[in-house]
View 1 (cartoon, rainbow, N blue to C red):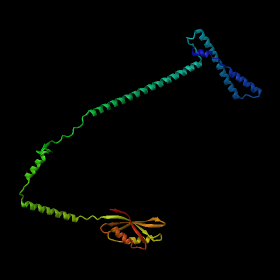
View 2 (cartoon, rainbow, N blue to C red; view 1 turned 60 degrees about the vertical axis):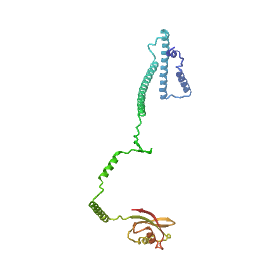
View 3 (cartoon, rainbow, N blue to C red; view 1 turned 135 degrees about the vertical axis):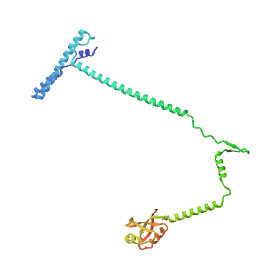
View 4 (cartoon, rainbow, N blue to C red; view 1 turned 180 degrees about the vertical axis):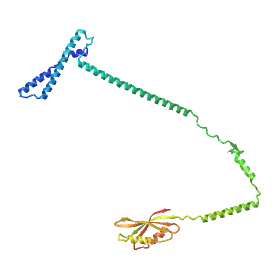
Length: 295
């Protein structure tokens, strides 16, 4: 049985909206309700829908009669509008399905191509590894032949070139050198030593210097730090140069003087600086070397 036969034998109450509408109007009249223009328009639409359903029912009834006369094998020459619409929708769905199948086939072809490329590259790599494994390892250097001694021990044979060179040097050596040549060599040596000494004397000597950072601590927070710094800077010596200074908090309101200086190592030392600064006993409690760097 075809789908058209099923639709022709379907029992549907197409006139139910009309009966519902008549029932609604009855109750509205009973309650004294006046129908608004919007409801009139809605009723008109419902009536049109009811007429369309009636037409569909009549067409299905005519289709049933036609199928019964011509037989279920022959298709109807004229189909209702809703069947035509459904066939159109099915055709559109089939077209979309066909397009998706085509896109999947193209994607499948591209994936097959990628897999083939990977297989080709893998086979090339395997061939290369096999060739590298089959290639022979580099041969070790040949050992130097050994010459046996009479007592059974062996010794490696050396090249004859150095021996030949030593023999040539021995031939060139003059055992009986002249005294004049010795005197000339001594004179040249003395002249070179004298020139070297003069050149070294003219070259200025390098003076070793150091940068020192001192921490000078006072007795308490009432110590005059300005006077303390003046006392520290009053220490003067050859090779001593005072630099910048600052006050660093220690605790409980006490601050220490941190002062930098540059000294020549051969003339001024840290012991001398500590000894000279601690002489100001009224202001200085102790002196520490915070940093010492060679320049």
